[in-house]
Length: 392
Image (spheres, rainbow, N blue to C red):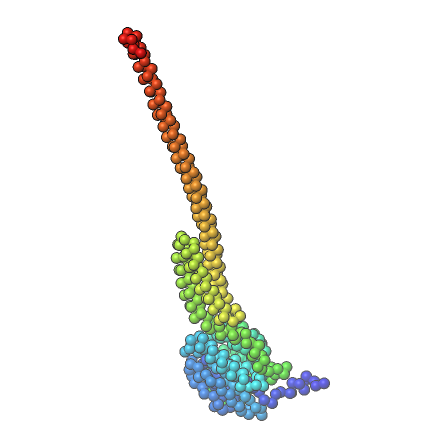
């Protein structure tokens, strides 16, 4: 069995490195320093020079060194979606440019720069592209502009290791995530001694990473696919949010108008149209989210409005049913009243006929009674005269 020292001596003959970092941090200059020649275009600019993936190979200290210069991140010349898509596409090309995988990522940071939340966001961005553990497992932090540190060191007498120990905040978090693998590079130095020392320190760290025999390969990149998909959707989120909020506002305004309609059946027609609109909006968010959860807050907003419309439909249906029952009761009651009224009319007319008949009978009886009365009176008056005059 091989001893620890034997394993330690088995360094890879070739080294494959991928440089990543924010635009303007000196990736290209670092690549040129490592390879010992001007292989990459290097400019003092905050605009991203590296938009197309480049890789170069040189023999350094008896080892074949291949460096892939990844695209610079943090390019503000493009909108968020375009920049995100470009970087993700180029990173995919960078990974595929070396099928065997990479021994290490060189995360390039400029010494002397203040680490801000933007830098933290850049690290989060890179972790979403390469995976949550890529810093811990494969990354070496390289601080460029080492000449600035040398000036500080000459004045303060502090070493680079002591300077790192004193750091806090975001930079310290980055150091810890990289397991304190950090080297300082002076890309402008003309001293061969400094150059050799820098390279020796860097290669030593790479060799320690490769001790476990692992490389960052396509399979590692593919494991982070879901995170990259979410990242891509998050880059589109401002536009999706604007479209969603606009449509949501219009639907709410329409709903408020519908709530003023007194006729429930008419309200139901409009509510069903609003339900179709909110469903289309919901389905659109589901499709664009693609199961990543990046649009979760928009889900909640639209779902809340969808539930409100469903409740309005339920209430309008209930009111329509109750109103129809009430109307039917009114019709039924009216019909019953009319039937009773007609019955009363018939009875009234029948009674009137009876009264008329009684009146006729009365008049007839009265007429007969009157005739008998006058006869009796006449007889009573004429009786004395009849005997006098011998009337029969």
